[in-house]
Image (cartoon, rainbow, N blue to C red; front, side):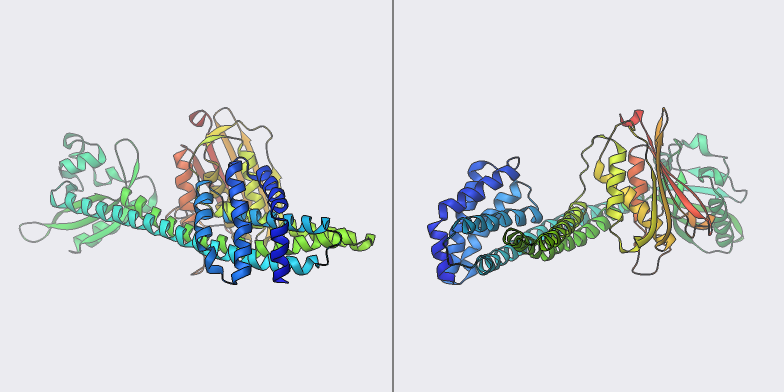
Length: 499
């Protein structure tokens, strides 16, 4: 049968190549030149013949390197590459069907073609994954090196007294304030001396409680080191690391405390970038596996279904085969959306109607196995004002919030999604009737790595990353929640600032 296949490919080389090339030009004319497509098709058929003759797939290695270089420059993903080979399969099938007197069984012949294409795609996927892993490793090393430099920078600040160094007396008044403190917080020494020790605290009871604990522990002689937040002169809330020690009086009693503050804002941003790159690396590998392990068998099944549809004259069988084809297309669409969602996010801004992004997020979340008993109510405002945003970023925000809503209702309840706008802002409200949250939990939900889920079921990064994305657009994520009644997350994005 292999000899028959070799003779068939040699005899109909030009016919198969012309059919295959014409299909690819229609599908990929925006990404590849006609000459590039023709070269790929001819080299592919030649490689198939050589593999059949010698029975060794290693001879295809140089061919794989050449097409990987071509497809990488054209930004083709694994699903698109698989589609290119699938068109080759269909081209061979079309030529077979025109050979009415041919003794070759098309199903058996397709089996040999499928085997060759599957093996070639496996080797291509391995080459693709190896290259992507090298890129990810380089990116992680670059970020780790940048983080190391930042840590060294922070140490140099401490050694040169460029950190914020201040002193508070026994009456809780500032009595010393260095240039490092002026640089970090924006206040001059004249502005801060005599002010109460709570002057730099952000609003909130938790910060007042934090200050009381510091006072009690330092009075007992303990040195207090913690990571927290402080407020600058221009109202920004920054992440800081405090080191607080007792200032002993002449008799060893408490006469105040010294405070050293280091700005950890950039440090945390770099750490979050590394964590995010690790997460995307894993998702990318899984998506590549899904595209290969599901996409290729589906393509083979689809081609066989089409053959049976052409051969069958029974209306009932034809109807059932149509149902099979529809479900195959649905699975292929799901795989494609998963692969698209796992791609590294694009930060290029463009004008978008947020309604389209919300619908895409709902479409992705509805594939979750937990939604069988979940009702989605949507009330999306038509013709929202278009704003200049990165669609991938907002998609990540809405998916994160929707997944949290699914967790809150434990797969059984109602999730309501509404959108609206006024002259200044666009509002997206996502409401669930799940377990809700208490005030203590609500204060921490946007903190990195804070999660109420079991170990292994949540990273605590979803809402933190989402909060950071919306802040880039000068927006807010507002939360209302009551225990056992549900929660509402409102994404608020200014219109004029993102026009």
